[in-house]
Image (cartoon, helix red, strand yellow):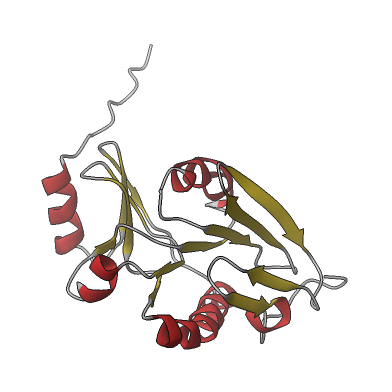
Length: 193
């Protein structure tokens, strides 16, 4: 009988040291570390489009948009992940420009990849919904027009699926409107998308 190798668990300090010593980004979840896979040009283009589209709103409202390389703190010293887009209006997040993570996002966006789809749709979504500051969570497909938009509505989350290039992502709580065609600008989609 073959023994199952034991998982290595890291302290928070070991996790920070690992990231400091490596060019690889790691997500940290209750002592386990998970290396972040590389991305596609399509994924990168969508993240850049989103950053560009959100930037004017940051200027009007004193907010900040962060892309891919800033961590989101889910639980202090035990859960840190890398959403594709973090949008925060919290003064602590905006003013601490030497920080490595955001604590109080208003908006989180994930662009799905084959390797992260299940985690983004379930595990991360459930953890994100527990963040008191979060108003909107959006999950975007890379290969077709598809935006899963979750918006806080009091004590529950309202869900909307947008699949048409003419659709608009309307986020009244944040005063933001994004056209799906602009989010996917320059992205080659599957036929009939």
